Length: 314
Image (cartoon, rainbow, N blue to C red; front, side, top):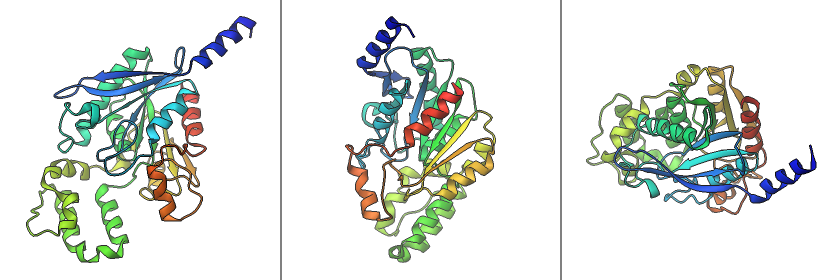
C-alpha cells in the first residue's frame, strides 16, 4: 500500500462512524431509526430487528431493559466496516405514529422489514441487505426471509426455535410460584393456539398482562408460527448465534434451528446472556443485573462471529 493510501485509510478511521436519522414508510406514519455507517463505503449493510414488547432501536425497553445491546452491536459492526440500521417498531418511540404496537403482528413487522430493506439499499447502494433478528426479531427475520428479494441472508441471535406456545408453557411451569395460575394459563394458551380469543373475565390479575384482550389478535398470529419449517425453507446464508447463559432462549432452540437447516452456521458462545453481555456464573441475579448496564460492553465473540460471517458472504 502506498503512503497516500495509508494516510487516506488513517484519515477515514479517525473520522469514525456517522450516525444518520432515517425513515421508512409505515402504515399510518413514518418508521424511524438510526443508520450508523463507517467512514467511506460500507462493505455491507445490516438491519437489526428488535425483540418482543416495547423494545426500541437501541435494544432498551420500558419493561426495564437498559443494556443498549443494539447500539453497541451497531458500533462494533461499524468498526468492522459494516453499516447498520436499527429502528423503533410501530408505536414505539420515534415510530409512535406508524401504527399500534399492541395490534402489530409478525407479518406486519415483516412488511416493515421489507420497507427498511428497500430504504437501506437506496441509502447505501448495497446490492442486498442482511437481516439480523434478535429474540422475537429472529422470527420476524425468518418470515421476511421467505421472500429473498433484496436480502443477502439471515443472522438469528438468541432466536427461539420452537412455537411460542411451547415456550410459554415451559417457562410458566418452571416457576413453582406459578402453580395456582397454571390451569388458567394453559387453557388460554390452548385457545390462542387454536385461533380463539380468551375470555379474561375472572382471570387471575397476574395473568392479565400476558393475555390482555388488545394483545390477543397479534398473539394468535404469533402462536401460529413454528420457526423450524421457516428456516428450513431459507436458501440464503444463515448464521445462528446463541449465548449459553441466556435465561430466555436455550441451546436446544439454537440446535433445533440448525437441524432444520443443515446449511446454517451455528455459533454457541459460553458465558453470554440474552442481552449479549458476558456473565461469569450461573447466578441469576448477576445475569439480570447486566440488563440495566449500558456501560457494560458486548460479550467477546458477538461482533466477531457476525462480522466474520458477513465478510465471508459479502
